[in-house]
Amino acid sequence: MEWTGSAIVLGAKPFGEGKAIVELFSAEHGRTAGVVHGVRRLGGVLQAGNRVHVTWKARLAEQLGFFAPLEMESGVAAFLLDDKAALDGLTSTVALIRLALPERQAYPAVYGSLSVVLDSLAEPHLWPALYSRFELGLLTAAGYGLDLSRCALTGVAHDLAFVSPKSGRAANRDAAAAFADKLLALPPFLIDPEAPVASGDIADAFALTGFFLERRIADPKGEGMPDARRRLIEHLGMNGRL
Image 1 (cartoon, one colour):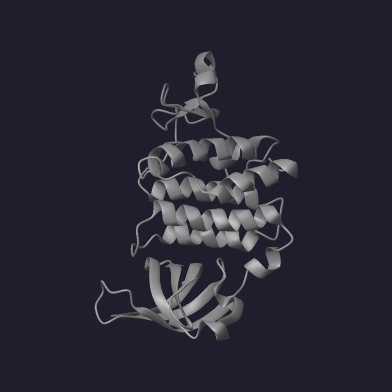
Image 2 (tube, helix red, strand yellow):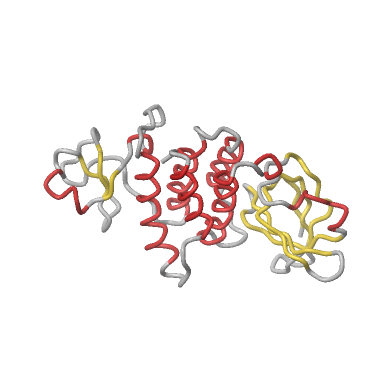
């Protein structure tokens, strides 16, 4: 069994002398782990978020296999050392992918969204909104997508401002005004890429996606939400970027 292509590093852990078990995420093969030999010579190549070009090989498809060669295409982590929020954003995306998606299943839409987030991490006023859309897409990929296409009460598709925490369906602002305090806020930029991101919208987006990520994915697995996500929200708040 063998495949070759580009992938994003999710993480690595030592495995004996001079080896590591590396987990990558590719568009065609999803989360895939493999042994890498001679990790000392690779330096920072195995940092999470880096893009690499690899060949994965195994005698049988169900085996762990190994990556050889594994070569750097582009790096991201080294440029974010002075931005704690961006580093936490990177760490949180990795943790959520591991939490939500099974191994060796292709999720090209998630891969594309992750790539967009990684490419934007050097732009502090841009990436939080893209990160929020990444979380929304991750819910869809995991089978728990929200229905934000039209109002669950009236069927209209305009002025959608809330989401039901029970059904995950959107609601029109006027139609749901009487019980708005029981609903989750829906920031416009999550359904309209051209909508401006107003003050408080990022916080509302984190609250919305976080609610469903926790209730539908983390809790059923007996796991908590990633610490990196909590730190990310704290750092964005301290910097006035929520």
